[in-house]
Image (cartoon, rainbow, N blue to C red):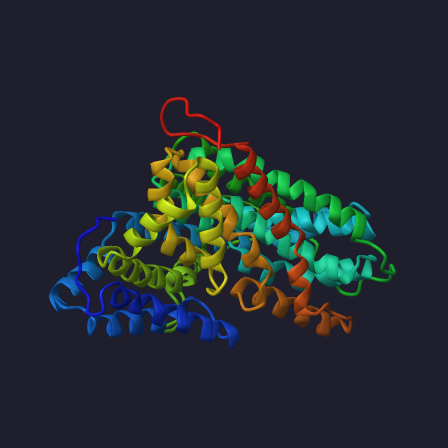
Length: 465
């Protein structure tokens, strides 16, 4: 983002006012378990309005906000979300959930083996749809009761779904956090996915061992009503995910890759008979009704898009009032004097930003352009490396805290499923033990301290810290 000078009453403290109003509103809604991208609109709107009265030049303040809204990074993110939202809806409508259920159920797996399969199924679904919240909502009603009746430990079974959702949010090319982390750092999606893969898969491997050891111990019983939902054809929808990943890794633009994936998902869904043509797009029977999956997909990301636009406006105010420059100068002079310290600073500031906010992509928008990019560039860290540090950090502790929207959705779906089948559900505090979150944070810290997976932008840089 371009840095200009915006004079505020109260100096730097005046420049902090929009951020303080925003965070106060976010925390209030999140603690009250009313968080979400749409409720957050009002917080950002109020932040911009209150901040205006602290600006010495009101016109320049408004222009700064509009420069943030018109930021080219934000435009790429918004466009990518539009196509990612439709892709997720097509994948779900194509029967991916039932296909994954069939894959797990027909193997005869029980206890900890089924818990491990649930983790893998959630990983695949989240990779295919790019949504952690959607993964929890879609899979918990089916896989939780199935696993309970197959002898899985209830808490570990629930965490297998949450961990898989976090994995997909962390690695999927169509995930909002992947899109935001890549484009706020100016990184190519191909480089981001390739270099993040070892980090995410190492954390997933550690999590898999934990689920295999502690995922059993329940009693195997009958499976009421579940067999009726088994449909193997949904597995073919994974081909659309392959198309997106291969295209992105081949260096194609993320928008181009998403279009290929959308078309593939629609064609496969129609061919296997799970998606009628009219379900994709048609004239609705009555005014105001949905025209189909395309509209539903766009609708699903409108909340995130508008909130992202407002966040960009608030962030630009912070940049132009000099707040972020002062934080950077402080970090450079007192906290960060080596590449190792720079990476640990990036991890720490991203984790801190994700704690009060119940959606993790906005946390990346707050710190990505203003703190992570400049401090990473000072030490010549590759754009993909900066993106990976930030994305892995924002997908760690975030998925353990109950006021975050993904965790709240996960527990709500889990509790409803348990109630429907008359079986017990673990408490929401079980999220604090999410294996993937802690494994990912550990992997990230080891990577920053040792230099493993570290890449630089130009030339050979010293690995010494």
